[in-house]
Amino acid sequence: MPEELLPPITWRPDFATGVAIVDDQHRVLIRLLGEAGSKLSDRSPIEDFTHIVEGLLSYAGYHFQTEAKLMGDHAYEALRPEEANDHLLQHEAFADRVGAIHSGLKAGQRIAKTALMEFLISWLSNHILNTDKALGAFIADRQGAHGPANG
Ligand SMILES: [Fe+2]
Image (cartoon, rainbow, N blue to C red; front, side):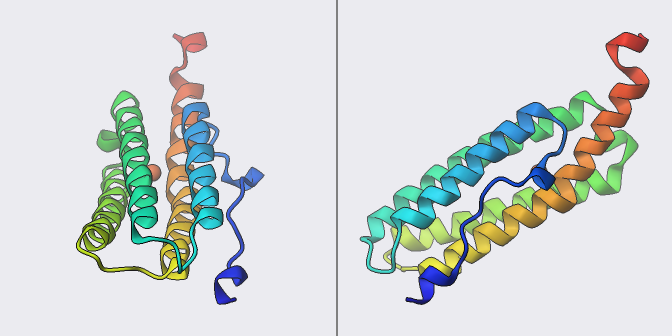
């Protein structure tokens, strides 16, 4: 079956951003994608797709709020305006795309499991590796320079 060819996403050491709360939430997202991959098949009732997409949208929204708060706490937008803006736009694009998939499902439009999983897995791994890690490195730098130990 073609859907079996897609490897599941699992936590890898190079996903670590160095920010514990972000890494913990990424592990939850990775677990949710793993569950989606093992529970869904193209023959699953459309309600199963809707339910899984709803859970992901909800947790991703919560996670994006956590990152936005961290950006505020560390003056990311003031000090790295382009990076911060691009980061927030990536979150918005993800929410829009998954929101559109969700609306489609509610209206009876199915999505192939492979198309859904490929989008979710590639978006999350690229976003963590290229975007969240940049935020993590920025926060680590700021904590090194302005952390509690240094006043
Ligand atoms: Fe992010």
